[in-house]
Length: 107
Image 1: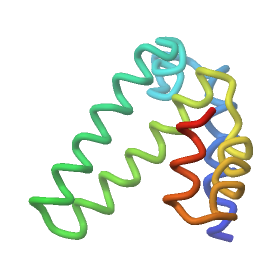
Image 2: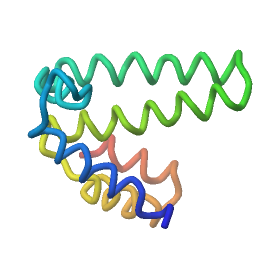
Image 3: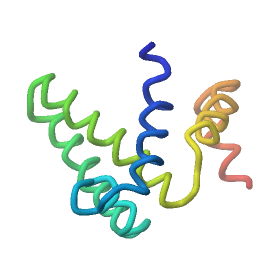
Image 4: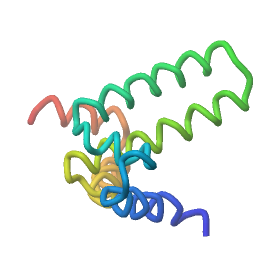
């Protein structure tokens, strides 16, 4: 089921943490820790932004996939679970975006 795919990918990334670095790009990123994972995530996010304003839909889809993968790797390097991120999003959707954003400024 597609709705579970990101959770399955998160598990695959966790499994790859124990793989052979010479054969696993994921392992290499994880071994680099948050610094390397954050750098790669930033690069992919930038490429997505560029694709969004200058390229076709296929480029946007491909770059968005890269962003999601690298986000999950980054979260793994910080021991943050996808479910924890989703919980925050669920709480935020209980109110309007403007109200939610204003409430974050008060914390």
